[in-house]
Image (cartoon, rainbow, N blue to C red; front, side, top):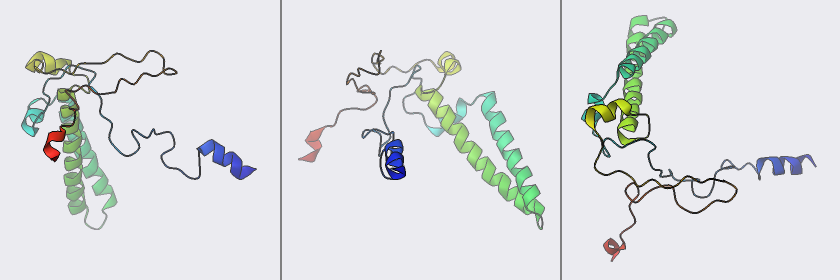
Length: 157
C-alpha cells in the first residue's frame, strides 16, 4: 500500500516533470511583457547605458564578496586565489546585471526610469485579457504575434 500511496502523491513513478504541463515541459514558454517595452531587441551597449545605481552596487558587492571568499578559502596562496575568485565573481555579476537590464528594457521587469529616459518602443505587444477563473480556462495563448510570430511555411518548399 505504501508504494501505491507514493505513486498517487508524486503523480507517477519518479517523474521529474510532475506539475509541468506538456506545453512547458521541454521548452521555454513565450509570454508577453507586463511592462511597456523600451527596446524590443537591446544590444549589450544599450544594456550598459541603462544600468542603474543598484546594478553597480550588485556588481561591486558580488565582486568584493567573491574576493573575500577566495581569500578565506585559499590558504596557501591567498592573494592569487582571492584574485581568481574576484574575476569569477565579476563575470557572474556582469551577466546577472546585464540580464536584469535587458529584462527592464524588454518590459519583463519594472522599467519606469527607462521609459522616462528613453521612451517606449513603437512596436508594443497586443496584451491579451487575463483569465478570470483558472477552473474554466480559455485557449488564448500567452504571447501576441509581435512576441512570437507565426510560422511561415513558404520557406520549407
